[in-house]
Structures are given as C-alpha cells and as structure tokens.
Image (cartoon, rainbow, N blue to C red; front, side):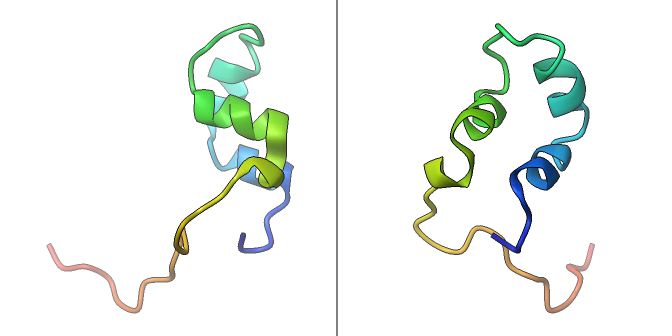
Length: 60
C-alpha cells in the first residue's frame, strides 16, 4: 500500500510501536501492530482503498 515496506509502516505507529510494543514483546496491547509484525502485508486485506489523498483541506 503506497509503496511502504513493513518497517516503514511500523514506524508510522510512532511510540505505540517503539515503546508500547517493542518494550513489551509478550504483551497484548496494540494487537493490530503485533499482527502486522507477525504477518506483514500478506495478513492485511482491505475491502476498499484504505488511504486516499485529500483533494483539499477540510474547513473548520
């Protein structure tokens, strides 16, 4: 998706990935991140396009 590799994608999760998940390898928090670490892109299936570019900024 958007040509990001697995590590680039995990880095997008910021401190949730770096602090919460990596510092607690046996934990159960942030299961979506843990599943992605285990299964990578092969384990991800979206019904529709997950991310789309904004054509304009929302007002307000």
